[in-house]
Image: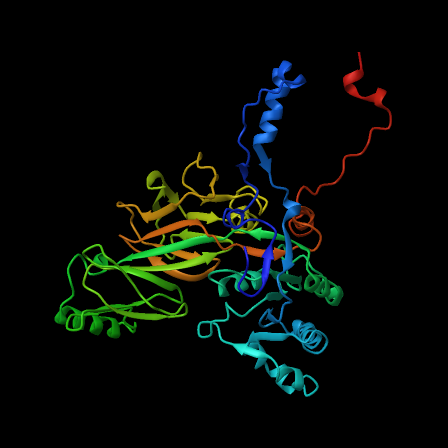
Length: 466
């Protein structure tokens, strides 16, 4: 699939959207009258037919090539870490002076006091293009993302692109570094290799999440009148709370705080979907609607969606649906819906299996379930999961997306989750298999134990004695 800014992978768009590594029936077996030795060997003939019918894509075939030379590079630096100031300046100087790149950074990074006081870096700093999260849309002008920090920098980079994501090159300058395979000591050589192209990449699938807010339930099944609205607003102000949402009966308006998510459509009482021409970064959305509306917000999530009980002391009680069918009710501290990339994060701490990022799947992991038989499960990547509050739930629930944008889920709300068509192309240091197992060993110390000593004499073993 060709990115608008000039990168592509050597695979079909269909494989891109369905996360590769799936078994396709790419040939139809046709009957032929030509007889050969396989006609007399049924078992071998069946094996040959199966081999002809099925083709499993080699993960090593995922390569990054440039349709045109990259020009615009986004550099993301871990905030509040003074040890990264010098690596950041070195990288920016290299990209601007030696590679003649347009470098984009966050405004809060460019305005850092340490950088402002460095006169030697002043000429480079003046050439940096700055942006502000939530205000400036840079999704269509970035060719490559370079992250300096830990895994959180890559998660943050993913959140900036709620559609197609440019290739991401992550340097390990943080604490854990499971998703950051490159060492900064050799950054010039590694960056030059990426600019030349033909690099191995891992397509890290993301979750497409839709949170549907039931406005009718908010109003207690009754449309707001002017008196009710004024009473509620006075009560909120008395408690020191700003009004979260209200309706104006005269103008027929609904204002809903959506905490930075994209509002894609709304639904009125007649069941009609009406499109909204809104910015991806809108925080407060006002639209002319009638009572009983639904507000829809979406997000692409790299690691996991976590639904938990929040500050309540009661068990979380939510219903889990798969393709519209009720599967089970989750009673416990909550539930984690994660990608294979997220299987080594919160899900691993909750007891889930670790899955290679090239496996097309969605993981469902309960958090401290009040059941001895509730085991984590893996479902196909193409299904749609839906989470709602159970009718007999004693409290509301809270949802977060990669640890951010936390918000409350009330009765009548629902969370719809499926696999996004926009994965994160993460550039590999070696290849996508070696890098993953190297991260398991180095970061999580997977299967590390003291080696068993060899027996000095096999004849001394107790199982050989008479």
